[in-house]
Amino acid sequence: MKKTRHGFSIGIERFGDDFFLSLKVVGKLTHEDYNKINPMLDSALEGVKDPKLKVFVDGSELEGWELRAAWDDFKFTLKHGSEFERVAIYGNKKWQKYGSKIASWFISGEIKYFEKAHDALAWLQK
Image 1 (cartoon, rainbow, N blue to C red):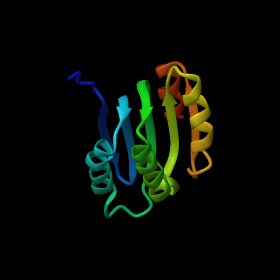
Image 2 (cartoon, rainbow, N blue to C red; image 1 turned 180 degrees about the vertical axis):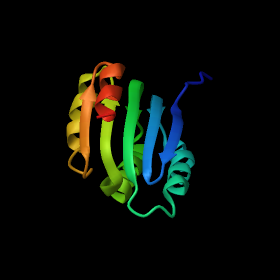
Image 3 (cartoon, rainbow, N blue to C red; image 1 turned 90 degrees about the vertical axis):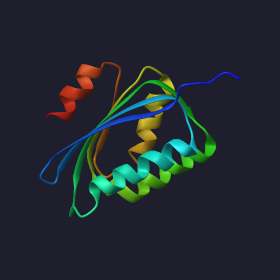
């Protein structure tokens, strides 16, 4: 049986009500991946009135989602979409660029796709 690497690495920094969230996504995400990460994110945001999230997503090793995982991602975005101030998606696949445009329909803040990580991080710091 071949084992494949997949999942999230997460970093959360908080400055008052401002959050900087760093996500590295790898492989093909599963429902189980979201069952692990969503409670962590919900817990980090719990009790904060009107949190402001700046998010860096490193999708350079992302291969996609299982169908149920894509639904989990969509539900999380609907739940927290109004809390995102800026989302920078760093990737290297054309479908990620199109996906970031679709995601912008569900997020109140700005979302932008980058092919260079340092450009994404610089944009978040503006």
